[in-house]
Image (cartoon, rainbow, N blue to C red; front, side, top):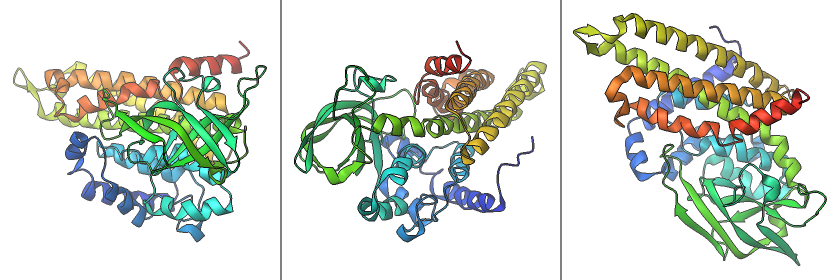
Length: 382
């Protein structure tokens, strides 16, 4: 279906992203999967081309354009090529907004140039071993001691934590028995701070190029100058960015579903069964026709929500609706596409197998499907 979401500037950005991905990512991608990460020099190359700094002010090396559609384009082009750009999506869509919104002038001078040119990598540490979607239950503590906070605690499932130079840690600086959401603060822990340790690199089902680690903090002295925003205000900050965080999952889910559809169309045209191309069977045609309709429906929903996000009008409930629908659609689409590959679909040498394993986490991170339903139900007055 025709899309009217993008301008000529976005399409020029798409051409640049496509050229980079086709030339500098696709061929090396299998090696990165084996290594469990994308090399740092690739982040720097993305920065050199201006693909990381669209939202960062010009005085720090960026474009100074706060337009989420550039992030959408970058993600769509990666999925089109049947690859991912490791933790780039997390850095641009989830973490960078906290720096853009809450960094003071001194912090901008320190960190923004490196964020724009790809020399500073980031992670955000929210989830704890006993705390997932319930951020109000965070137990990591930060106690003020003069011009420092003394940070203690552990985090898990931290995307990009292995290579991160800056880790935005959500820590409890105060406890209010009447308001569990109060007293949370964002602290930026820098690589090399004494007491900051990276633990296991977790062996995931999918998303192999995106490292996920455990982090621990033992009496880490974090300067007050590394606090993002006001003390005790983090829960509100996290909630403010949740619509975009959930949209990035939805955008990726639809882009991956579309990639699965096209990969399957190509495969069934070549693959023969009983001496006949699999594409000639009525079941194949009907399945792919139905899948195409689902993908287009999800795309239309996502595009409308992206426009609302850019206009500052996307509600938390609508973001939940879009994430729920897009990720559940992705799951159905990729599963049905894999079925058309037959036994070869179960082999990791075929991209459809990776798309299948990568897809499963979309219904979990940035809020599970069940949490999305709770949010939507509340919006319905239930």
